[in-house]
Length: 389
Picture 1 (tube, rainbow, N blue to C red):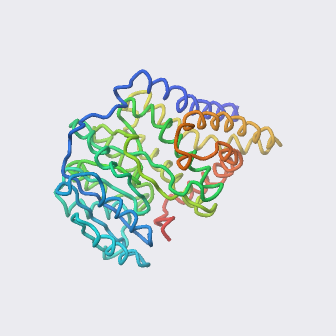
Picture 2 (spheres, rainbow, N blue to C red):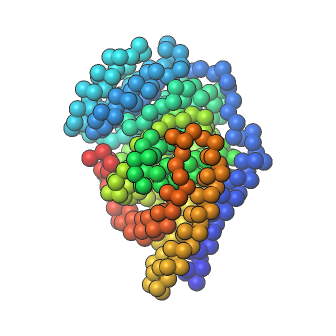
Picture 3 (cartoon, one colour):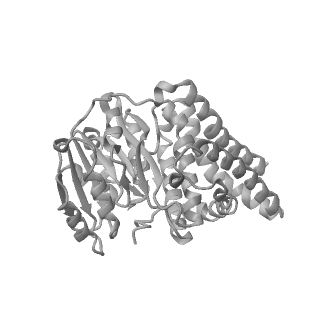
């Protein structure tokens, strides 16, 4: 019975992501199209930084070279007490800019969310664009990201994230395909009803007025009294939705991030993300049911899979069903690999990877789910930046 229930949850997530989402994308096209083509509000880009190293230079240069009016775009970099030379490198990159760039250093390490809030207080711009310190923006990313705010109902908008170092290793190639599905399929149900529940911290934008309204909530985030710093993007998006605002994702606003290139780094990232999903769902029980039924179902299904899938894997392994389990994963991943190839076959060769690189996920996925979900559950009080050590 337990295995059947877990299998049903997995099936529900698959239908939600790949069938229902695709159907809604085709039947509710107006919900997926950007508006406000001539809308150019005053924008401040905020980059919270901690131990980023030389990568911060590329991030800053990609922001200051945006195809956006110079008098309407400025940049604030917040150094969260980095222990390397990130601060010096940021200053050097800023000196090459024709835009207004400010760099501040926190007195103590406070995490990404509080660093963003400190920058929000230092600007009067209408829109705040948050960019991770290892991200490079395409030249029109800011313009394409913020034009959706022409609709006053919209409170936050996220861009599409792609992998910069996709060809570096088998693990980065695998993640490049995973990122593709995350933005091309996984968010379609939520996008259809303008209630995207997680806008990536790599590239997302918010109305400053909403952030100021939410300031008391954002300042005091904790688990049983212990402040936490992970999952800030998911937490921030959910607070915007909870306050009654629309949240969108626009695939036209592209940015490129560095995917973990070793299994240790990947493990750390996935652990942090699982903590985020667990705590986000538990804290969202009070209001997620008020969303459109299909969005609420999608939200609950992801959590159910996170909890139920490890149970299914453990039961099958206990029954000596490892090979059938691996074969099932290979079959599903082969189908997804073909789907990825069909969707991206016209892309430039340097922007896609061979679909066969997705097959190792047949072994990576069950390992990650089986071990990291219970580990995440018992480390919800973590205060680490995880991947910035």
